[in-house]
Image (cartoon, rainbow, N blue to C red):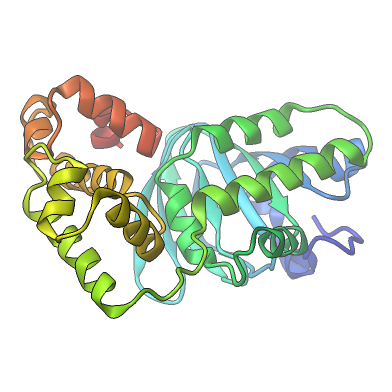
Length: 296
């Protein structure tokens, strides 16, 4: 897996015994001559114990496209668990080594994309983001992004020889990840406005099951609707509507995992007018239907 690249940080993989865990079926570096983006397709063995993955600087997108397994990951602390299943996108956090173990019934398949760290950070500078919160980006990506999923599938199937396609794809992926999954540092708002934003969020949490309008929120914190939207977006990086919807989706996620309530009962508890409205919003925010999320 180690190539002589001035753009990609692959040297940490020099001692990694890749053949023990995967069979590589495609490599954009070797097969297409790409230098700005590394895309690989793998077939994974169905069971692994304590696979130590090295820390590399680049962004590493992993898209399962075949198989299913219970995946356990440890990164410095305790083990965390998630289900490997097709379409469940993951972003490896740069400079963070991890240990993994998993058991699946069938061989697993994936498309994996490495975006050079330099490409991401230059893009962040152009966007005015500054320091990138990669851990926050990884957490956001884990909630789902159908556009990135399709982009990874597309570059995994591309056969364009030469670097122009790769450079364009790397730029698109970097811009989208930073725009969609990395919040720019919020400008410090006056303390009084911060207090009103906190009050608006508390009001949202208290009334998640009720229909809320911007006017309701603005009246609660004694602001005009225009002023509320402006200060709320500046303090949180989101509009009040998007923030409220995210709170409702997060509550729905907890109820789906922690209770046996049907979706028809969960919807009104989270402020959705119908199961269909919950399902539509849930798919848009997580990339999955509520039933699929519960089963995963």
